[in-house]
Image (cartoon, rainbow over all chains, first blue to last red; front, side, top):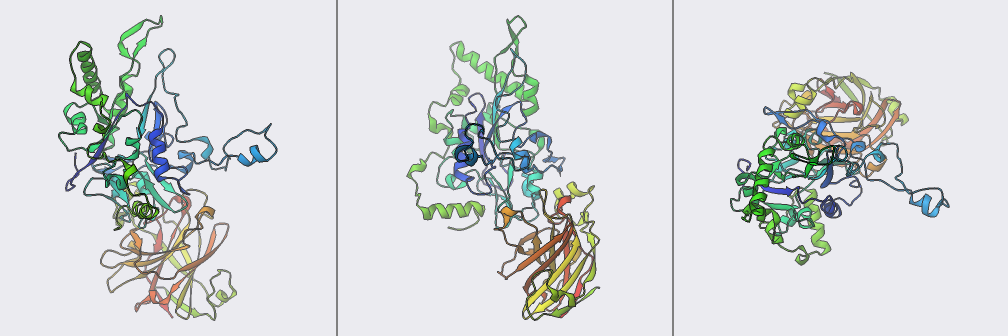
Length: 364
Length: 206
């Protein structure tokens, strides 16, 4: 789905069957974009265990999005609901003479930030033994086709870039009103309390412009992140989303037209009380997956199972070959340039950092 | 229309408790909420239609000049030092151009309004300017003013009672010599076009 008038739409597909929750994507993003003061608690890319409350805490209950072409009021996630960005009591433990009776812990500043964090409920999941279950859900800005955050900004600091549909913000215009944070139903916008501006994933646009895939995708050890133009009929994203229909948006009912898609997770069968296998029921409840990915998730899972059965019986599957990703570069569409070969001089880095803060609006 | 008489000071009395302000008796300027239907932003209208805001009834305003500098001293009851996500804030608005800019709607595209906005800051925000120099073309539709006017502010608070002095170039008054003021209650999450503003322009007699 391309925004009307836009030349293209960057999209990504995450195959949740291959995500192992290693957070390499999160850290790749973190070290690249949110290392400065005021960004300590920001994780533009984050992986949470499902079922779970996620990041920020209980984000799915915070409202936002569109309903019948009307914006839905939402809650602005607080610093405490994001949590994290902690300082630790290194001085006390390492140099304060209390090494035997003090333990390393976050310093409680009284603002609630030590009671939640980016991956607080890791691996808790749902269900009960022997049918407990969980899977990992990587999340970033959806660079939506109908970005309600852009509509909610009174200053006009946010916009959807024409050439690739990326949602960006000119921080020199942003007044820190944070209506974008309220309106975003995915709660993937953070606030920089030091600089007084909102910030979110920029889809690594300086890398894209050099033909390099976003860091979260390129650094993923599981090779599960596809990047490309959603409208490219020959690309894997178009085929996974529109042809095979196995990649689905998260919470499509939010109405924003997300451009991040997910191949839903298959799971082993449940066990009966006598530990015999219930071959009718997958461990991850289908109704739970439907609550995330909508009713089309059942057909998507059926397709995946059918294709696997085909291969097991000696046949071939172009879909599974695509998801296996025999060649790493097949993930990245036109973004296969090795960033190690780029100009990384301090001058060049400074220019690009300036452009990220200006939402790509500054000339070079 | 409320008239404000500007006192010429011998020095730039930026501190709200500077004794020089005793010679400039404050004038009570009535404030009204920026109408929710005037909000140009559908999200803001949806989010605030049923929420009360802009309840600050008035601000006490004193005006002074010192050479080419204009000083505006505002006093009002807010919510006190920032304790939540949003700060108490105040602003002085100046109509620009010849259009019929409306203070209640903070200007429009054909009649922009110049804004000097002060906000309370967290200790970690001391790197942010004390005052923002903005152009408004509607409720909360603030963008940085194109010129680099030298603005400054000083504040004090007694409980929930703020005293703030904003200073900037006297030329902001233009030929019309009119100002309005606005305040935002941070505890009520007021910001941008959600706040209280003068119901009409005040004439400054310099």
